[in-house]
Length: 281
Picture 1 (cartoon, rainbow, N blue to C red):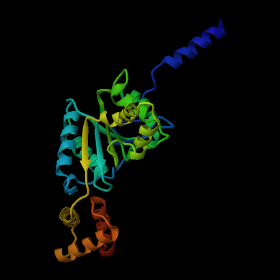
Picture 2 (picture 1 turned 60 degrees about the vertical axis):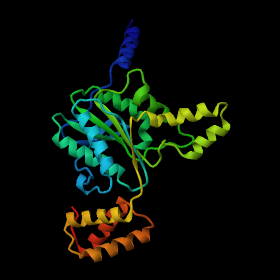
Picture 3 (picture 1 turned 135 degrees about the horizontal axis):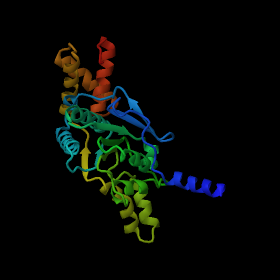
Picture 4 (picture 1 turned 180 degrees about the vertical axis):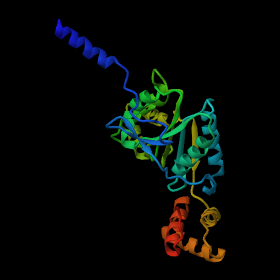
């Protein structure tokens, strides 16, 4: 009889809902998901820029800002995929928009970063967040992509839209990627060459990106936009250099890097700050 009661107790423990978060969600606006311990680590100081410093991506900024505002206000909003060239401000935009909207939102809006390698634990995270309906969450995965042997994209597809429970009303998913369909071209070409029905095999893989209702593309910037970024940073941080000198140095820097982007502009400013003793904090 005692053994039977013990088995019943064990079964009830397995059926019980997951424990509530062991952290005060009011201590920070942003957290990092720790998959092994199924806990959230608070981020006391988010590495984000002023949205006004993100130059050359005005349309992308408007699209993500509007979507995030709608979500924070309790209106319908889409999962968002920010895709495109490296260093063009994708992850910076997500963090900047969250900070701007969270500061004015009537209800709490929290940013939770999940690492790429922990994507298969996303259902566990969503189950926990579902228990906090008064708080709205933006789950953010930076540099999301999948390789040939990776099958975790299937669980991500189900979590975003296709699962029986669906995405919780208080959760939205933002991801950045250099790949529009989150998978390398050779991965899709391999499916075409080896599958019995190539079209269906490719369709299964590219359908993951279709789970994101909002696609926002980022592209390499022109020289004029690059210099606009540099001047914006220089003015914001109080550099006292003649424009001709600043322009010449910035162009020389981009030539040595072989690229022009927001990341290259910021790296130039960091180097210039080191040379001139300027505080960037």
